[in-house]
Length: 425
Ligand SMILES: [Zn+2]
Image (cartoon, rainbow, N blue to C red):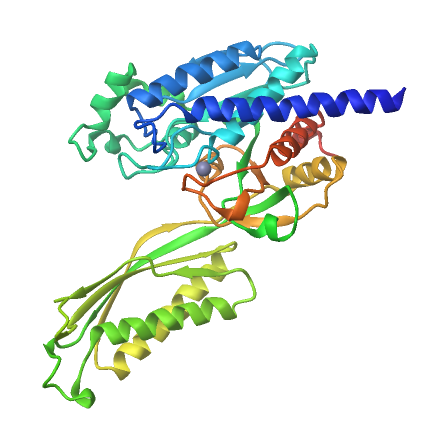
């Protein structure tokens, strides 16, 4: 009998995976251009996607509405109406020429899990809310996490005046979408309404694949420091200035970049450092570069670790500049703190993973997520699902059906066994 039950359960789980894949494909078709998936904040396609997701939520037994920033919000009541909720979610905007999975996997898996509870008539001692955040990527207005900041009550109204590349202000774009920019404050939720925020997301890196695991527990969303470095030497003729007399800013930048790489590679604590852009002036084949600017992006799973690394790297670059007689200017252009996943929630994620028969494996998130904003009002945790080759923000982004299944099983088990913090013994 138990065997039969197990087999039926396996079949139903397989159906969850099929359901997820079908919806990923359906949502992935809603794009600015058919060949390259692009669905930016408050665009026509964004609106069509919101309507599709609202329909899915209602079919899953949720009440659903759009909030004032364009988040798609669904609510499945618990054993009695009005209980605080476990909030699940992810984002439904994309980068340009995106993959289908970054964001939608977490959102769709959450909806499919609620639909499964609804089908079984199962109510829990808490409500479940599913939020499709409107803007996580920040592609259109160069300001990220707009959806989750509105929910957390930390939305900065001054961004309403910013414009996209076509000159359309966020305020106007909201009105075109059918929203009232004066009401964004109404999207904010209170601490009392929420037990936790839990997000399932593709890993966007190769670590789970390397460990041959479909899912993992996220330890923290890594904080990041971004720096702009500027080296000034002396431009000169490529043929006439002897090597010993040169003050080549590009050679100094090259040495600095290698130093950054070596420093991060030698680190045992998962520090990562990237120089992603460089610009050499005047930029001619036969001229020694007199001025070079480059960016540095440093991330680690602990703030103290990252800050120490930044201090040491700046010291090394200063030494390189001094030896090469280059003037150096370094500015911090962006900094965000590490968001640790709550221990009590992480333990429940681990139990759900173990309960599905997978090895519990912990890893940090190097990429940013909506949890970075949500932590201002509630404890957060994340489940990562393996993606092929770690490829993301690219059309080749891919998740195997079996892994989508595994993610859904873990999330469903997690929901059904979820214990609010005040009830954790
Ligand atoms: Zn994402």
